[in-house]
Length: 143
Image (cartoon, rainbow, N blue to C red; front, side, top):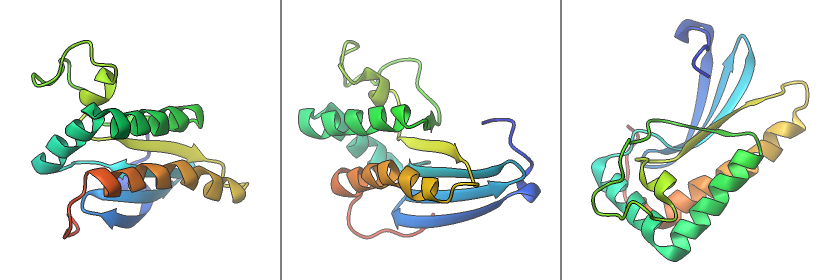
């Protein structure tokens, strides 16, 4: 998705779900890109995110959500660390998630079929709900 039109050629609409957690609609010359999750988290959120990924129940739940997003054609964006965070073993079952600071997923949507927008929102709602359930603390302000 790196060959997107310039910023002046696109419009964004963002729904903030919680601190650093959002669902975004980006309209540009190529159509619509739907995205959601957490991007650019603060350090306290990164620590909680990784602790929840490490935990069996919440980590397994996120792995399932990410798997469903991938099957639905979403691409995870954002940097991935080359090494595991030192607090976690290299052979961790969710090492791919622990190397991330957050999970944000995007997918181009066919604008000829408006029903696809609602269908594509479902897994993003699951992802943002996971964040509000496990990572976000009370009280937040828009970045």
